[in-house]
Image 1 (tube, rainbow, N blue to C red):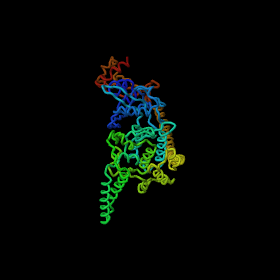
Image 2 (image 1 turned 135 degrees about the vertical axis):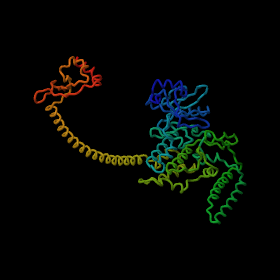
Image 3 (image 1 turned 30 degrees about the vertical axis):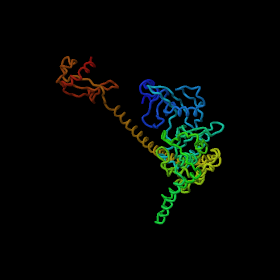
Image 4 (image 1 turned 60 degrees about the vertical axis):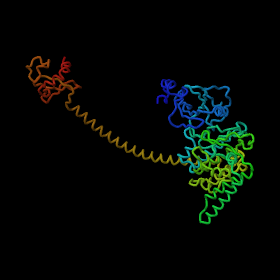
Amino acid sequence: RQIAEGNATMSAWAKSVRTFLGRYLLEEHGGYKSATCTVHMAVDVEKSKGDPDRNVAIKIMNEPEQFKHELELRLRSLSLLKSGDDIEKDMNRFDGKHVVPLLRYHEEEYEGEYYQCLVMLKGERNLDEIIRYEGIAGSDINAIIFFAVDMAQALQHLHSREQHKVIHGDFKPRNIVQINGDYKLIDFDASVAIGHEMTGKFSSGYLPPEVAQVIFRVKESLRYLQQHQKELQKKYQEAVANGYYGDNERAELKVVDGKIKQTGENEKPRIVKRRKVDNLEHIEPPSASASEDKSVADVKIDIWSYGVVMYQMLTGQDLFNCDGDDNLKDDQEQGNLTNWEDIADDKLDLVLKDCIDPRGLQDSAKELLRQCLSTKDKRPESFSNLLHNSSFLNRENSQLQKIDDTQQDTKEGVQKVMVKVDSMDKKFDKAMVTLSELQSQLKIVSKTVSKILLNSDAPKLIYIIPEDHSIADWINLKPLVGKKVKIIFICPVTLSVPRDGKNKPMGYTMTMPKDWVKKYGPALKASLD
């Protein structure tokens, strides 16, 4: 706790005992591990408490080429930096408004191990967690619009011909994080310059059909597929004849029909090897004879992925059935993607289904999905085009509505506060009346007490004299033990002895106990001396 609070002594101790690379105190929760990297959330003990760069995420990378690729992609120049140097904001290639910036990188040996890692700001939550736990998908129209515009602008920023000319290549909820309420992009492992060959690293649940057709190239012969088609048609007819819908047979027929179409276009099937790396499907580099199978980076790849994410935001549902690594779950889903033409009406019916939509944005939201989730030739050419033409992404309208909503909320809030103020005023008035009554009563009590003190004897000091004046040396106290004494009180104001009506001193007679003399005698003697 003291380290987290910036205690200098404890921080210095942590550097030598419990930190990673001599400066990062790793947190127990919040990170993850994959085949090619390990991510830890941590506290940078070299940064003081309150420093915005103190809480970080550390991405430890296993593959040198991937480490170098992401560094070169993210930074303007590596020549001026060395391992452990703080990276100034303007040295990041991308705007921090859209992309989580790198704070530094490390490429060094530590405790016998060699590490290559990227250090960046720690995100609060990724979009996948927000969709799952915050309940905005399909319901909070303002939050959805602002997210949609922000992410469209972020991807446009990457694609910009004047600046970067790259695609993200793996745009999905897990690669979008929220920092101080703003959405930003992370993970550029799959990012590549526009027009260049794709890296082969992706999440198939967010790939467009044209890329899926290359990856999931069918291997069956045309003859086999045609035979299988006939068998499925027969099963489908039998199911219908028996009063069933034959949904399973019809779905499988659709997949086979698509494979036949693909195989018919290419007499010789082309095989692309696939394996999993970093929980993502990975294409083996194609041979020279299969160069036509390569996928080339295009802005429309990100536009499709954006559409898939927007479908999740607008419906709260997934467009495809995927596994835990965001890859298509089975062959049927792969067939659904490779044979994709347009988004079906039954899927569009889920858009903002349970949302109060006073502005009538449901139709424009559906149109946005139709544009993004279409075949490549029908998709918009750029996010600039999409932002300009989509009424759903008209930020001015959404801002005006948000202002109206905010004003209404403020008005309602003020009304609630005023009701509370009125109630408090009434309670305050009542309290003031009660206080006034108490003050009046206190004055009466004060006068009464003063009168009692002034008009009656109320001694505060005492002195003791023997009842028998013949006792000698009574000042030594010992002769008083077991004898009768007279206790007389002295007024602390006038220092006089109170007297009765006959002008005799007023006092009380008692027998002096031994224990009393023993206990209080020294004090009495000291006062008498």
